Amino acid sequence: MISKSNILLILTSLFGILFPLSINAQNNDPTFGIGEQNGNLTPHAIVTGVILIVTGIIFCFFGRRVYRLTLFLIGFYVGTIIAWVAISNAGGFNGTASQTILLVVSLAIGFVVGLVFMCCATLAVWLLGALAGYTFALFILSWRSDGLIHNNAGRIVFIVALTILGLLLACFFKNTLIILATAFIGAYAIILGIDLFARTGFAQSVRAFLDKNNDTPYTTNTKIYLMLAGMLGFFIVGSLFQFRYHRNSHFGPGDGSVRPESGKKRFQLPWRNRNAV
Image 1 (tube, rainbow, N blue to C red):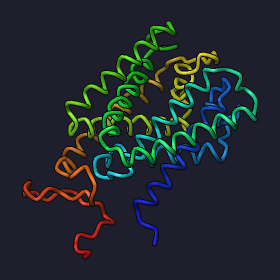
Image 2 (image 1 turned 180 degrees about the vertical axis):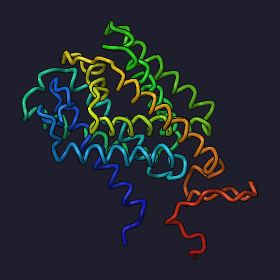
Image 3 (image 1 turned 135 degrees about the vertical axis):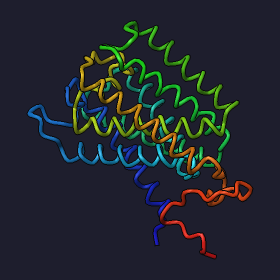
Image 4 (image 1 turned 90 degrees about the horizontal axis):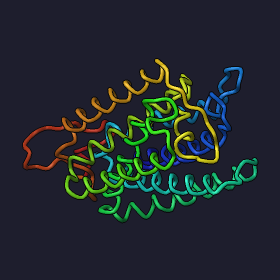
């Protein structure tokens, strides 16, 4: 029988496959490259949005609970993002074949890094902080048309600075950061997934801020501000949920059970059977 953890891992892998595909297909399309110009959603747009939302919910509300999946997801995100940004900014990847190569290479690197991170928990937690800082930088930049910082060099410095800050915080505040970082990254994924259906323009910020070879317009409006506010809402709710139910859960090898010294009954995932031998 396929375990629930394996199902979650499969969903995460599908997310990794579909998310870069939606980015690479954009080509200055206001629907983020996965919706037709007449407003119709393509099948892979629907699947991408669903996967983003599902994996975002898992990360936002259960990031501290699902230990192995969280480690894999951190590595997969980090590997895929680094590969995609590096290869995209190298230029010459506008054709269909080149985009396919970009996708496959990014996925391969992300998947390998994800598997490695499953065996390197300390490194994974450090880079979880870095990933949270990176995501927070994109979030801040998204509050203004063409980015809060218009200069490309200044934007890079800002992103790198917050990424390093997140890394440093992870070194000193591990337990708290695991919850806050997974909640924030998960909230970002949820809203990005929703935007693939709503198409407010928020998703365009990804390529606008990260790919210097594409002059992608990013214009804020009331709908985008609502998406950003919704992301804050998910982050707050996800953080409170994890602090309430998962704060005393063991983030490490094992079943993620509650520490016995807490003396409190905590939230239990519905598919877990405490009575199993």
